[in-house]
Image 1 (tube, rainbow, N blue to C red):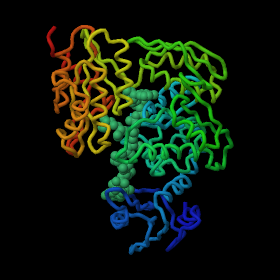
Image 2 (image 1 turned 180 degrees about the horizontal axis):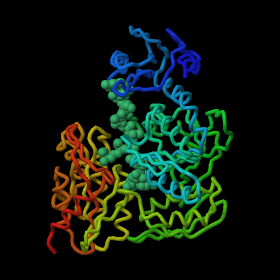
Image 3 (image 1 turned 90 degrees about the vertical axis):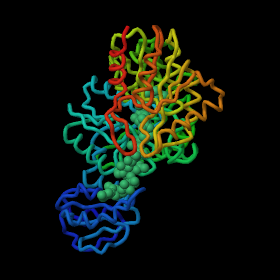
Image 4 (image 1 turned 60 degrees about the horizontal axis):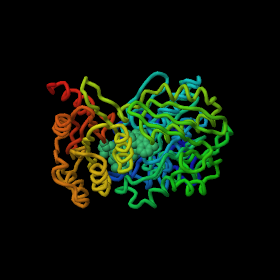
Length: 495
Ligand SMILES: CC(=O)N[C@H]1[C@@H](OP(=O)(O)OP(=O)(O)OC[C@H]2O[C@@H](n3ccc(=O)[nH]c3=O)[C@H](O)[C@@H]2O)O[C@H](CO)[C@@H](O)[C@@H]1O[C@H](C)C(=O)N[C@@H](C)C(=O)N[C@H](CCC(=O)O)C(=O)O
Ligand SMILES: Nc1ncnc2c1ncn2[C@@H]1O[C@H](COP(=O)(O)OP(=O)(O)OP(=O)(O)O)[C@@H](O)[C@H]1O
Ligand SMILES: N[C@H](CCC[C@H](N)C(=O)O)C(=O)O
Ligand SMILES: [Mg+2]
């Protein structure tokens, strides 16, 4: 593509230099630039991409996109907002890949990854070649790719969707984080269905207040249907959780058809007769296309919500309910989500990714439903993240557990002891007796202590890291997998 063709996608852009320069690829990271690439200078939160334009030029960049004309002898597209320009240019460069497939996006504080996995399974079983993008991985066409976050930057997202389309992917289901919405990572991406799981406290370090956080999530629904795709015309759906009060706000913002799911309030897709055991969850579902009894192999009422969201999205794609039921019942679980660790011990060990107050409360409620003995909870809170959720999570852990082992969960650049102290403040506020909790900064030691304390019938819940295989301390990545550590400790314990 020529630089002048790209520049013409932005009405107010000014192009300086030779417009006939051919662009071979787009890059926003100078370290990845190759000969002939267009380098987009993003002003970031930590550094300014404009400062890396000389490095990009030295590596053979053919042209630049910047917010001010730079003193570099290369053609330049000067725009007001490089992030916005990046979403438009990426879409154009990769020929609007989202318009070449059905795209289902999921936003919400908790349940995104789980719901994407459920939808992926249903659509694949239905014979639709399906891709998945989210926290654990991106996968399509039999290949899996690691992810460094939940939602890619617009450039990487459009590149991924283009690869998927070229591989014949017909449907993609992806997580859409609030950071992504705030930063316009999915701008210009043509979603057919936008799903909302739930809204509860997280990321207030970034979004400041719950109102701001909700408003950012609202962008997903207000923008739904705004993209005019050259090759497809389709109906758009906002799939909302009737039991979450934020849904009314999103419904008011979208021009798409609103379809609701839920348990407590009236909804288009509604579950009843829920029963939860340590092995799974049963419920009856009524939809706008029939009803069915479903036996999930995943525990927790929250997984009924995730299943309802998946049932709704799949029904909108005309998948018969009997097929949806068969697919859902075949899912053994999602990596690191309420995952049982079994090394022959006579008590339960569960690894889960709950890292928000609501997530922790939900998983603990589920655990309490089937624990016949004590509940021992090991958890921590991430560094360089919302500090206000720390005492709340401390209170919740103590409310639902007999014993709490407060430990580290990716302290990142923060002092691990300070994070533990922030959690302990919540325990103090609620007057939790000192003998009911331990403060053990080393996660392996905390897991060891919990397992040593466990008796038959007890449940050891290790929350916060789920599928993660590392512990990030002072910027250094250490190998750490809760599931492996728990197994090693159990095997080392004598019975
Ligand atoms: C707050 C936030 O979202 N930050 C993201 C943002 O970083 P930033 O703005 O600080 O970027 P920067 O480091 O200042 O760099 C600015 C520009 O200079 C470029 N650069 C930089 C160095 C260099 O040598 N050469 C160069 O060209 C960079 O490539 C970038 O284009 O852009 C970076 C590049 O794309 C992201 O990696 C980074 O994610 C950081 C690591 C992060 O932690 N993000 C989290 C909070 C996040 O987005 N999380 C959500 C999930 C939340 C959930 O699931 O609940 C997610 O969607 O992943
Ligand atoms: N629908 C739900 N409501 C509340 N809590 C949930 C729900 N689904 C899952 N959880 C809890 O939240 C944890 C994370 O679930 P999941 O990974 O599916 O969410 P996510 O939204 O993708 O999270 P992230 O924002 O980190 O990507 C689970 O381990 C579980 O404890
Ligand atoms: N997507 C979430 C994941 C948190 C997982 C937890 N283990 C942590 O590191 O805080 C975040 O980036 O805030
Ligand atoms: Mg996720």
